[in-house]
Length: 245
Image 1 (cartoon, rainbow, N blue to C red):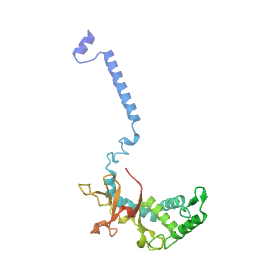
Image 2: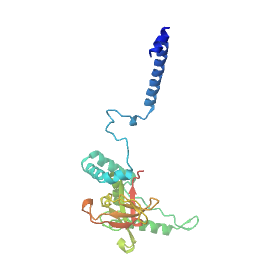
Image 3: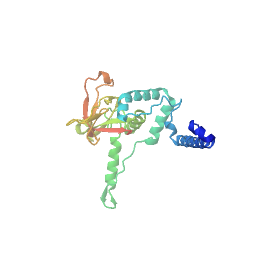
């Protein structure tokens, strides 16, 4: 009778209230366990409330932030001993004291090494790598060029080298390299693809497969002061970069 009166007035009997409490407690426990199993990096609390939880396309972020990131990284190289030491280690571990050597496997016939040809090729490779021949400015040799490329990639995230062939090389080998400052790449120049017009992503013109077809360079380092861009076909540019997807 008492249980019926409590039910009529919207109050559960003691047994039912106890069962309901147990069910709610179990549900809360399961929710707590599920919360604990979630990624800690996705939790929102006083330590992470200012951390963005929605990301943009990497191209959009690079277009607006890449120049600032590169400038700050170069400032750290000038003022921070730890970063300079890291970049020195990159040079040492990737290149070492001497640039990679060419090893010829020229043969007169299968199993018969052409000793004379191999020596000639090795000598020509060593001569091409000398200062004033392999690099257009004439100020660095091939080892120093390799050091600059890997150091720039570790510091700036990318490196650019322009190939000069035939008469433009300035040497008897018909081939030379020119190290470009990546600041010259028009990173703020972007456009979507349209009919008959290829897309440009941070200064790099790409086809419908995402393969670079040309690079757009600004005449100076200050993008705001640039009035035009120099378009260079991709087959003349060596672009070493850290890929972000």
